[in-house]
Image 1 (tube, rainbow, N blue to C red):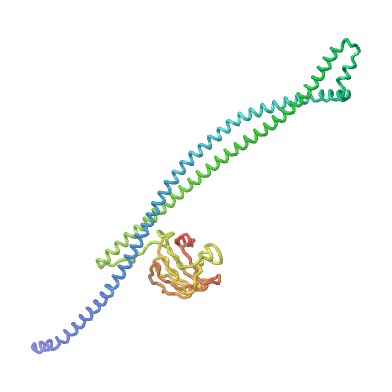
Image 2: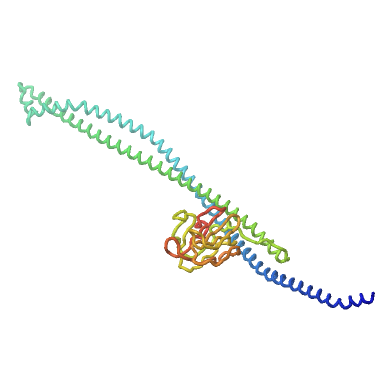
Length: 393
């Protein structure tokens, strides 16, 4: 009996061995396939991660250049501000000097006014007497003084009469001359007073204008320094975010080198503000905040032109959408999205990971009747003006 059992085990061993061998071969084959797929994916993942790291490094260098430029600009503005402050102080001293001169000018004006009153009183006093005397002279006719002389009854008193007549004639001339001089002085004083007033008003206005202009310039420079500080703080924040992302990318590269499982590498969108590539080559025909779809812009471009992703991300939506035609939405993480609407064709699928510069679709008819795309950018899930994020051109 024991021999029979032994014989059965002997006859069954080749089959069992064959089955085990086939199972082992199948398991090894599956492991080899999985390993081959994984090994094939690692170079692609490494290349993508290295590309993100290079992009991060390039942007960090650009931010550093921007920081250096802001620092140099701030030094220049601070120097200009010091000059403006000195200029403001000079203008303030000029205004003080003008104010001091104003007291002197006012005193002169008061004296001139008193002089005018005196001359006016003198002219007013002399005028009636002079007018009466002139009437009397007129009544005497052309030979007025000769008639007085000939009216002397005693020839012996002719000399005295002659002197009297001469004295009267001189008195009349002096009266006329004095009155004429008074009138002339009065007119001159009035003209001088008006000229002095105009000169003082112009001088004070010029000093006041110069001081106000200096103060405005100094305020503008101070505002510029505050703006530079704000931009520098933002630059430092973006650099910090980018450095953190770069460290994660380096860790991802190390994990890939050791074969460890890694999280999906990505770069935040914020540090690339003002440096993002345009989604399509063309001209902006409708700006942010205008038209029936105010949350984005329209860019005119020839039909069939490639619409490109502005940043790395994952396709969150790809398909027709009411009001936007064929629409692609790319999720860039941290509640940041880019939208590409009015596409003629869609070249990506929902869930696909895409890199910046990758084609998401082609330009089609837009609401203005031309060809192009509708583009929208949302940061923290709120629409923002894309022109503030795209490269200046």
